[in-house]
Image 1 (cartoon, one colour):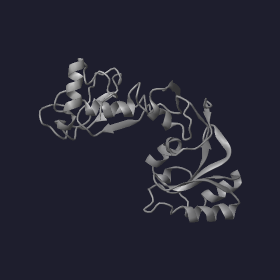
Image 2: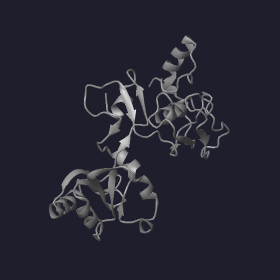
Image 3: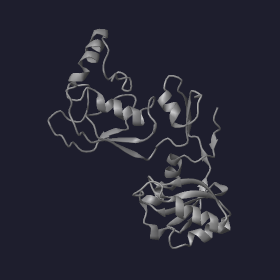
Image 4: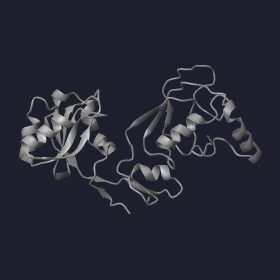
Length: 249
């Protein structure tokens, strides 16, 4: 079983830790940033809040800083931002934050699990919080997604589905073909948007279980390739929206 207090640093935890900083103007925040519950001696150094043009581009400058200040690199970041995490003293971390080539330095926070779910039949969720096998049939998530908006660009969403608990809304109908945004498993949407939304934020199947869903209908599909599976479901008398994450592909 995974511990409730997670000390490793997968990128999604780091983004949740420093996410608010990315949304704010850099000049309004200090270059050395503290957290309520820091892990002593661990820091995130950000060169640039934009993704790198080329993967691996941060490795050389990160290694140079680590050598200069006698630190040890933990992770390199290129995709969501340019930077790295490092084990180093607080004094050295503050010195690094003063460099002109560094946007900011932030303490790494202790992250506590917001919830745990038995996912013996959902290996996709088990994989989200566990890299190595064998899988432990648990999905421990440090954050629930509360306060986060996920935009679904798909067909429609069945807003009243129990998986969403009133957290699904229509943002903008870019198709505007008269079918509306509420996907009641019509031939226009066939439940696909509901399925996608449930993987993102459904109470049972979702990764971010407390987030808000904002629908932007962007396509209508007749699903001719899906006709055989649809016919089989009709024979079984099952609703294609009864379990939004159990669609057949």
